[in-house]
Length: 329
Image 1 (cartoon, helix red, strand yellow):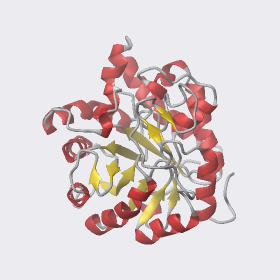
Image 2 (image 1 turned 60 degrees about the vertical axis):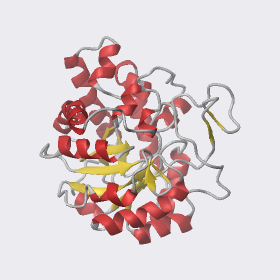
Image 3 (image 1 turned 90 degrees about the vertical axis):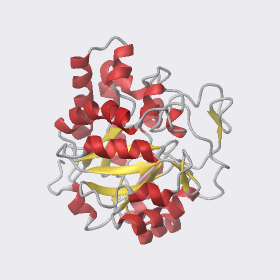
Image 4 (image 1 turned 45 degrees about the vertical axis):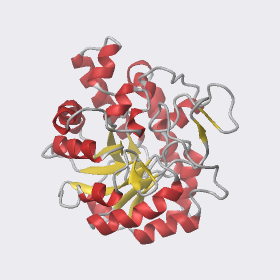
């Protein structure tokens, strides 16, 4: 059902379950995600598939759904011959589809409008490097129109996610300021630094005094890297922490596949949906074990879920740990 509380109010009362990698579920549904727009293509060509993927996560226990707008940009749509007015409609549709998927359950389901980084539009893995050669002002100009359109569609929060460096974080925060919708800021990291190599303490500090930012954290990273980042984000910002890492499996950048998969299996994976960052090794234990989830909670995490290679079954496990006895449903 549509929430009766703001997301900020809900986070003040306890932890919420995020969804997992949207493209993982779309691929399981038989969708072809080999296009540069990845799942954003389906906003035009198969919106029912996106709604069905969201619904699968709702059934698994997700309380917050992240929209299919990560890769959706005016520039990307223009390359496909989609004009600005139609692109605006598709961006708004991404919010509507997620809202509709959450309408059929008795519990509150919040919608987070995904605002991916500039590198996601490039579809070349740039979101895992950052430092695109653009100024903060240029990045702000790129992000502002999409943020304004998504905000007008009425999501509960903007997910400024998979951010690789502090320049882009600053641009996103500027573009989102005053849009009328709160935001969370989530970096993709390697060790204790952003993908571009900046110290995470400095990166998190950018959001510490931003009243419209209701959570800060990390996504699309190794779960082990998230362990230290959660506590650091809470300490630096004093805000609730959002954490949704990848599965922890090994990614082969040369073959663009996960370890043990056949040809083409790596196409269109996870939230980032394009070329993905390497992870050191396959996990020896579940990356979402009850011990790890409870440790994240103790350190300040209030929004917990998964990104690449994390599907509904894993989210059901997260839901069971955070709210024993409920699990999927």
